Image (tube, rainbow over all chains, first blue to last red; front, side, top):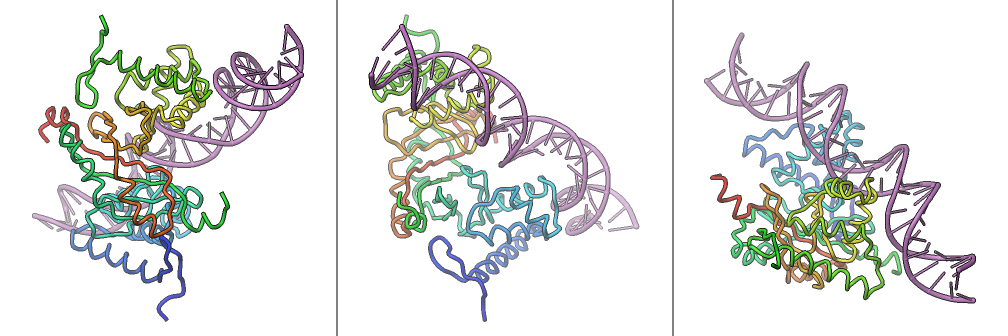
Length: 165
Length: 165
DNA sequence: ATATTAATGATATATTATAACATTACAAGT
DNA sequence: ACTTGTAATGTTATAATATATCATTAATAT
């Protein structure tokens, strides 16, 4: 049997074990290729993020790290998280001061997130033209855009169903 | 004489006194119209934000409030700021945990910000299609977008000039 | 082997934000 | 004008998020 878990992601059922394994393998391969150290700590933090398709705060992650005996002080979590963010394995959701595993690895992307304000689920979408939209302004003003993040807040369909208003 | 100050905003010179006065008057009129209390404290905080075309942290604002004898504890600043943000007179720049006066008041908008990572200057642009771009995904997944913010980080033209790399 | 660099451990503290409750000002109806 | 409810502000305390710094250990390169 391929899997025992099946979670709703974005809004579709999927084989979560496979999803997690695939992502870890991809990160492993990437680190191998670029001589980055995919240490047990960094791997564990990525696994923690992949477990949930929602944003986790650094201290929530730290609690989980503690449980697995892999570090217990804030800098440990923050350092692993910056590594993951820096290399595109995770993103920081600024609105939530929290982190999510990247849902579109290996894609050079300006991430766009849809964040449910009820359940905090985070769906990552490609934002193909958002930086393009700004480019006219950017060029006109001489601004050199290096990175854009689009964060959309709203209600996901399961929360709409749950609550009348 | 109309003005004594002239600052670079976005990237253009403009008459800053007029800009400030206009914005304050607009806020005043808006509050009048919707029976909102544009109290001295709220006015002062908006003035502080309008003085700078950059993002200010809550504690920086608080320091300036203290100097004018208008409150000295964090909740004072945060409460005024949430009022201003709630009614569209200011925006929070999540990336910076800081606040800017709205540059496009009275416009129903999904703000887009260009933030210089060197000098923290913040330029607000209209983001006409950013929510539109996401709408296909949003509709497909049943997500109901209520608000989007696009934050672009990069280098503004004065900082490009200042430093070679 | 050893020097160099990168990662982790550990302590302390900085920064950002809010909860909770007391007090004052305002606004609306009588 | 009075009083009653509501909104705003004052004040204290503390929560939540994040980083600086220095010591130690591990990996990597020569």
